[in-house]
Length: 467
Image (tube, rainbow, N blue to C red; front, side, top):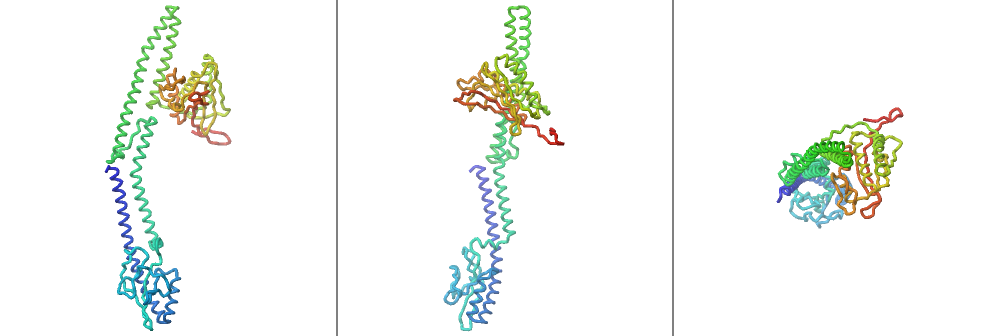
């Protein structure tokens, strides 16, 4: 048996044993109390019955029994059994009641299991003037769940709360570390590499503790590998910068000395610029993924940032023979964030759309407020992606493996990765979708970015931005 199974078994076994012992103890106490009270009640009833029998004979005794049978205040029903073994009122006699006449001390015949029937006391007998003998047998008027009424309410309440507390503690001891393991796993899945299972869960000596220690060991290894990879990217990027600078200088000198080589030098400069941009993006991705970026949040008006980005992107679209259109709202969209990084995220998404839109086609920018978020949708006319690849497009260096997909064939796969890291770092959302499907192809592609709007308060009929 595993340690966890043994722990669960022992916990339930102890809980059931404690419950059983408690039940037996309380029941024994209640029976003893009930026995004493019943004996006293029976003696009182016997005295009343004797008086009735002495005053008016059997008819008076029958009248007394009838009055008692309809009284709701009595805690004990009394059967008056004659020499033929029949009740004076014709009531059904319990099967467990003693035979008459018989020499026995069992007087109480309760309608529940026989283990509770052995309540020894002398069975009262009544003898009339005519010599008729009657025996009084006490019967509990409450059967089945009715006997619960005899248990004091405070005791029932205490039993309920104790049982609930034990059940809660037992369930919590099992589920709490499992929930913690689930939370740590989810954190690791979304890139929180510093997330670990607590020492409390690790210190357990069962399978859950072993799983917690294994998960932390795995997280440490993954974190070490990824951080090493990020550091390698940063080191390579910095090392490549120096030879690129020297190549740029050599290209400039070549163009000055030989006019015929100016075209070649210009091409070299263009490739160097592309490499510089790639290195900058690699460094940005590395910093964002490692958490090395320190956000500088400030109140921003998103439309003003977009206007600046659209002005530059419009010029770029014109040079590429493409059309850039936009639709901005009349009302401001106030957010809080780092101006540099938010502008960079929007630029990367728009440039990605321009890159994959066919010549002569258009890229449309739609901006509005949606469910307390500032929403920016960038639509292009490029090829779509398989549905299963839409989420992966925001991963660094991602390229679709689908045949015929051209969206990532010429891209480094870093622009959208940077945009996703920036937007999520600002508690926003980003997603991609095909506008209409034909297999995995589409007539358009859309990237939707959303930032939470800054909270607003109304003062003196004017809208004030709340910090």
